[in-house]
Length: 47
Image 1 (cartoon, rainbow, N blue to C red):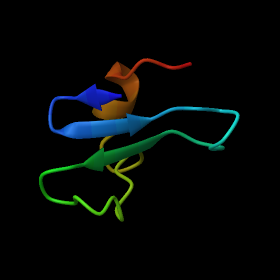
Image 2 (image 1 turned 30 degrees about the vertical axis):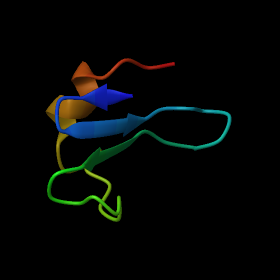
Image 3 (image 1 turned 90 degrees about the vertical axis):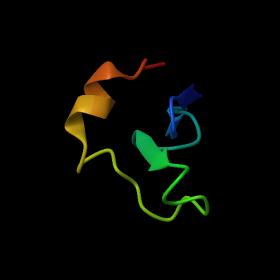
Image 4 (image 1 turned 120 degrees about the horizontal axis):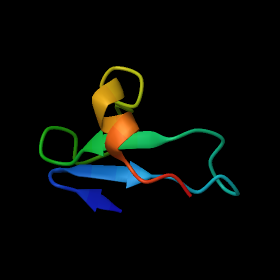
C-alpha cells in the first residue's frame, strides 16, 4: 500500500512485522523505517 512517498508492507501472513519504505530515498526498499518513524507506523492501516 502507498502512503504518499512511502510504501507500507502489512501482511501478517507473509511478514512478521510492519515494514515501511521511503520510495524516493530508498527505491530498493533496503531500509525499513517502521521503528525509526513511529508516526508513520501509527498512521498506517493494519491488516
